[in-house]
Figure: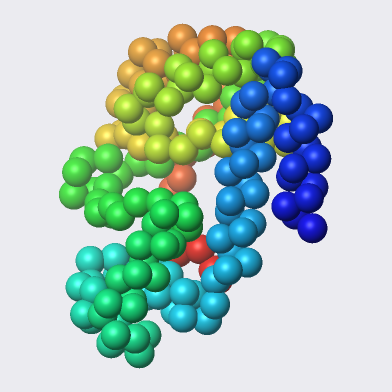
Length: 188
C-alpha cells in the first residue's frame, strides 16, 4: 500500500522544481517506514543494547541478543544502511567540558516565508553552542537548546550569534536550574 501511494505521489510531483525537496523527504520517510516494518524482535534487542552501551564489541552484542557474531554484524550493517542507526557518538559530561548551563531559547520569526525559514535554519546550524533546533507548532517558531559556561557566556552567545540570526523578531530564554532526567535512548 505504501509503495503504491509513494509511486503516485512521485508521479504527481515529477517535473516541479519546488517539490524536489519534498520528494527527497518523502523518499526518506518511505525508506524509514519500510525499515521499521522489516524490524523484528532481534533488531529491537540489538537497538536497545546499542542505545544503552554503544561501545560494546560485536561479539558482546551478539552474545547479549543470542545471535552469532556474523549474523549480528549483518543485522547492524542493514540497520545502518537503512538509516535506523544514524551515528555512534560519545556523550560528554557538560560540567567536565565547562558547559554546565543549559538554556532553552524560544524564537519567533518576523515571517513564515520558506526563504526566511531556510535562511534561519542554515544560519542556526552554524552556531557552535546550539545543540538542538526544533521547528515548533505553537507560540514560538523555533526552540533551541543551547549550552553555555554561565550567564555571561550565554550573553556572549546571544549577542554574537542568536541576535544576528535572520528574521528573528522575538526571543525568550529560560535557564534550566537542574536536569532531572535525560536520556538519548528512543523507546522501541
